[in-house]
Image 1 (cartoon, each protein chain N blue to C red):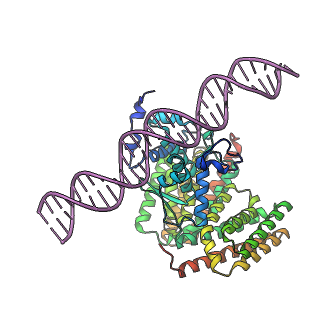
Image 2 (cartoon, protein in one colour; image 1 turned 120 degrees about the vertical axis):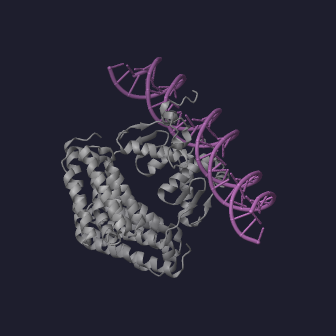
Image 3 (cartoon, each protein chain N blue to C red; image 1 turned 135 degrees about the vertical axis):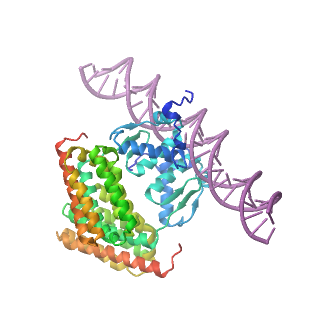
Amino acid sequence: MAVTARARGSRSVAGGLGHRTVSAAVAEALRQRILSGALAPGFQLRQDALAEEFGISRIPIREALLQLEASGLVKIAPHRGAVVTGLSVEEIEDVFQLRVSLEPQLLILSARHLTPDDFSELRALRDEYSAALKVGTVEIWGELNRRFHLGLLRHAGRPRSLAIVAGLLQDCDRPTRLQLSVSGDVARADMEHTTILDLCEAGEVVAAANLLRIHVEHAGHSLVEIYRKSAVVE
Amino acid sequence: MAVTARARGSRSVAGGLGHRTVSAAVAEALRQRILSGALAPGFQLRQDALAEEFGISRIPIREALLQLEASGLVKIAPHRGAVVTGLSVEEIEDVFQLRVSLEPQLLILSARHLTPDDFSELRALRDEYSAALKVGTVEIWGELNRRFHLGLLRHAGRPRSLAIVAGLLQDCDRPTRLQLSVSGDVARADMEHTTILDLCEAGEVVAAANLLRIHVEHAGHSLVEIYRKSAVVE
DNA sequence: CAGCCCTCGATCGTATACAATATTCATCAA
DNA sequence: TTGATGAATATTGTATACGATCGAGGGCTG
């Protein structure tokens, strides 16, 4: 029962990054595992096992799980532990419908305030993203897509709305990975991102917002289609 | 949460609230204090003091604070403790703008599926609400208003959207109390609630949604006006 | 006198230990 | 065989104890 940090555990979580507390570091590590698919929906997260693996006690594990529950990544039942959550088809449709309702509106507010620096950063993101797609490294696609969309809306001046959209994008992440690896919409998404950027830079904010709406609508429809066909596990 | 257990055996002073865990009970207690205004924005929540007051250790206090941070009621800074959050004018405008964007859309989806039981429940809520307003017991108004609006949208079949709206309504709660006790919009809100119900029951869903939009818009504008005039503390 | 550093107290974060609850599985009766 | 029942085990929830970090205030240095 001694500490026995194995090779993994010895990689001190606390020293890993600019994280100020162990619980925050654990939360981040688990978040990445869930978003990357390493922890599938339905998986039971046992506190003891995680504590031993990270080489720490259960207290920061518990607090990390609470933070993850706040993000909707796990569901905690009293005395029954935490389980990785998954989205039903209805919830996925809902999430995309919300994005369709919110993102174009925010883009109209934000587009005019995008600076040249913003544009170069967004183009860099798009390049990195399309490069990742060509190589097939789908793992980081969700993160890049999220940062791209949030970057577009950065200057909308609506903090609460942005927080909500950030959550929606995170929840799109896992299912969307599935869509990209299956369907052939990769080139389309890439081109749409480029066009949206061009329209914003040209001041055509309404056109950009419309394209963004179509972009999200298409992704949602395509993803739901795939889910329906692949007889997703419940 | 839907917890129905009774706190048996447990002799702890804090356990007497009918929650399954102490941390959940503390979270609920603190939530009510914050929403009722007993804990003003900016107030520092010290773990030791809360633990002593509830007669428990700091562990469940910490977990309760994490749950409150998830709801956005407090902000936790590492090694610096938790502080009750307040909404800036921009955030209030954002919250109401979001409600304007979401609630009418959801009402259109939900209205046709409202059952006679739903209507009687909603009318009861409205009666209770207007009665509370006449007596001046503003404390429970936020809760009643929240349940009324959520009840209207109950059958939209959009779980994520409803969760978001629930959060928005909660954040409207504290500021709205201010509005009601200051302005004379009480009768107007009551009448609008009634008319919305009538329109839904008559099948005039589009008209109901429009009125709901105006209802929320008015509440938002009125509240922002008050905040601007009263030189709110930052 | 101003500014930096260091010590100290207060508060928070985490580890260990114990209590409470859920789940499992063997047992037994119909 | 099947279903219920109750002890044994596994897992979570909470208390206590210890270590780490932040902020304030005093002394030293220029």
